[in-house]
Length: 181
Image (cartoon, rainbow, N blue to C red; front, top):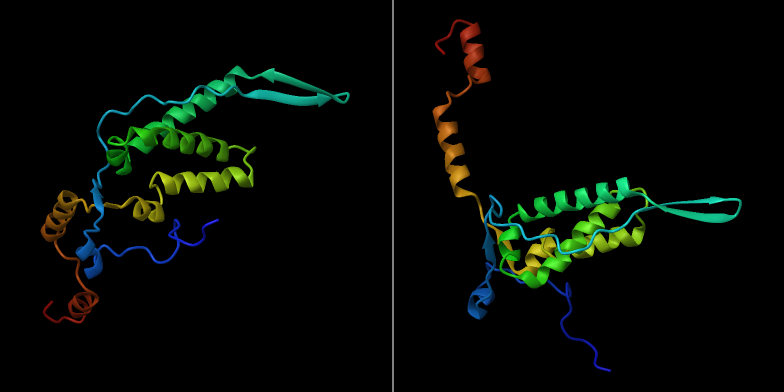
């Protein structure tokens, strides 16, 4: 059996600003900071039935809970739409093969929001988030970076320059003692 070799997260991550990265052509794909604004694909997973389970006289009872089933589905669709509004959605739109993993992250997230979540569910959630690039480590693993929103930065610079500067403590002190502030 072979051993060794590169593994996910083994050793330091490549630094896209290093000379070695420039030499081998390694760079990160920029994702739009304002998020993805394209069409959101249909949620690919089927509805999961939710059951109310209880024991009575050592007998197990199981009844389909239609309200809870519908509430879970609505939450999945809400989280699916939110996920696609992130910058990562721009990359996912070009990679339909990822959509199932994104849907599994959504489903696992909804499970982790419930009281029935286990440690294994929470561990799976983190792994899915890494795979689809929703964590800083996942962004690097996928070769992505979130580009700065230059329009918003320029707008903030303009509004900061237009706003009058608040008086400093020194100005207030000079005014109080009759100096020329």
